[in-house]
Image 1 (cartoon, rainbow, N blue to C red):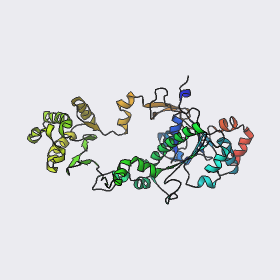
Image 2: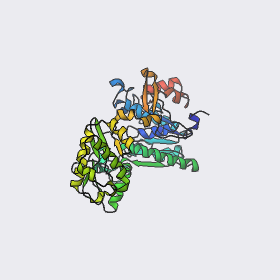
Image 3: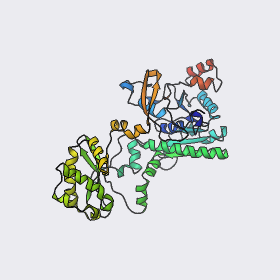
Image 4: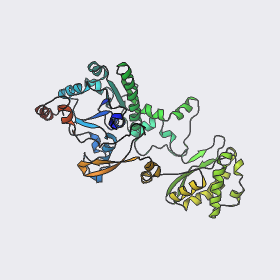
Length: 416
């Protein structure tokens, strides 16, 4: 039995109408073996113009962004705003299990391809809609950006130092949260479809997804407590002393914190011995009884006296040196990786995370991040993202039975 035949979603077909707001949903379903057909407007999706680009060559067939989020899909061109395009889409719909879209709320209804219309053609169809604020509610038709959604989802207010403005994560995240939850919602609807023969409309709000991700903070609000930003410091539940969590070192950053009581004594003592061996300790550090050290009672003066020599120690050591020494001494410690460190991570390499993907059109092989899960009976593989209209003949002629002359006419009319 081939690896593909073991794929969990090998019998599922998805029509992917999304832009960058929903690419991830289709990618995750395709990773699980679904036949995801990415539908682009004639000339190519706007997402193909998002950088970075392979070898910095701006070209719609060389977008690394496109490669990342549309791998494992097939691709066709189709304009569903044209009469011929709508008719072709309806034909494709008859053999599909799900449609994923990320248009503005109401757009699909306006084109005559809303859920009610689609379900009349295929009662089993699942329509998954991904939008900023969902299909209904007072903000449903508001415009948005990543920073808008991260702010209004509550996530930004949990990030950053408490005495400085809130922060957003540097790489856009909002629609990645939404896309991942759209994939989960589609799978649940697909399970229901397989059991009952019924389709349904899955409504995904990126704001909702972000708020759910920050659910712990939202839950505290419901209990009357607003969690403050902690940034690179931690404030104990019963102590008002700031405790440093993020530290600069010789070539980057590391994370470390002092732990109180018996739980942290071994870690604290091991680090202090290392400091002492290199001349960074002092009489005060040597006098601390770590087994009975109570973080809840520690004053800011105490924490400053403990952390000052630790900070000087970190500054003269590189991350790799610190990581090796901390592991050897069983100190609770973590290096802060940049992307090159992530690529070289022995843990990820030990899990065969990185996959070599051939790109014959580039005459190159590119290293991709691998599958997001490991299955005992299935290995997530990666096929390169489709080129513009790459599978038009395969799908329109091979599956829908159109002739070459019909395709040429549709192309000339701007439908495909």
